[in-house]
Image (tube, rainbow, N blue to C red):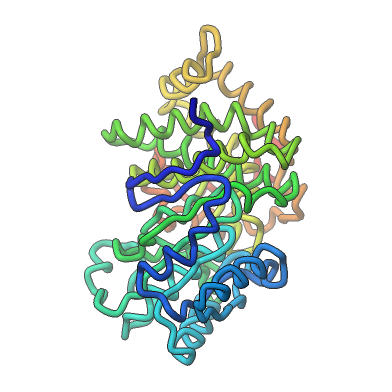
Length: 390
């Protein structure tokens, strides 16, 4: 009988090497992509950790001349990407190892993509056919190595980058941004503290939830989203309580990738509002999603009654309906220590109107099952600040 922690390889939507100890395969995978001098891109907080230092030693032992760029904020900015691109070009690098949580992965993918471009990054915002402007011949190969189980950026074709001048987050998209390999080793998440395990894990759950509730026909995405929610419901609390439980860690790492695969169908209002809040106040993306989610779910009720019942059936609830599934969601959220309001993470209520306008302009708003206007998003934000679920 196989275990969830056993190493295996998947090819959907890209090559995925998954399992405890999989990081040992990084040198061979790098060499296989022609990387002799890769740039390892990570965030400021990881640079000096054992995770990064052990990975560098692993590569150097195999005569791979690796350098590090760690100038990445928790919400990566265009300035971070520009600095990383300069480091990539100045160092004569031939590939990127995107290492870390969503910030390191998104920044690394964006740097690798921009290595082949002669236009500014905003020319590739995920609007219309902007992606067709890109040159693909100079895009650097990427190996994505997640150290959290949340964003699923390791199997995604886009990066979320903040524009500090406008205090907005933009989705930069191109099919060539998909990593050549996603190297998913649950062991790398073992040291993640409980509050970050909860926030990133809930982010993965939200990805699955919003993808399932997004309008349109995509039964493959729906199936993946439902199974992702089931796995998260079963294993996230265990991963939060016992960070050394590699079975739970493995399941949650799978959920993260599943969420990113599923949201090819679309996301929604949780992400639209969370992106606006994160760009303005530099909040943790997964935690912001987790706090905002029930307030958006309430606002979407008329369009997702049947979806909520189906989610409840998948989770094994008896005679599920909207309210029973919603009550479970609130209990699940509380069980992993998610705060109930934005005020709990020091987000002020005074910018509600501006955030409402930014939210309707966010590309994720198009996937919401209800087309809310700016006033409605502003009202949802105010309720999330106050804790008003009435």
